[in-house]
Image (spheres, rainbow, N blue to C red):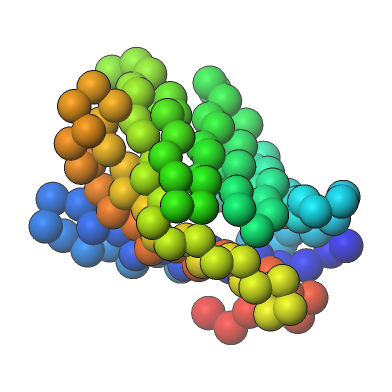
Length: 136
């Protein structure tokens, strides 16, 4: 089903706060307990969000492909491509709330370096999807 997706992200990095508010056209489908949102980001890369009430998997079809896992009240090791090569991080998700009725998913997570568990950045993300257009 054709919709719009809005991703709001508040990022705490090195004592600075960055606010990101992005809106894209998306396709929404549901298979079993899983919801799927497919869209193209500002770099033109295909992105797939696959989620249910306890987990979000975000796949970005970049070169190389990036897959991030967010587990409700859990941690997951992820590999993120950087200019210095692939870096190992841990997503530590301490707030995860899926509200299917209002078409929203909220998650708060810390991104930590895998080798020493040192905090890299903290995120508060809200993902919403609607049939009608979002106001910017």
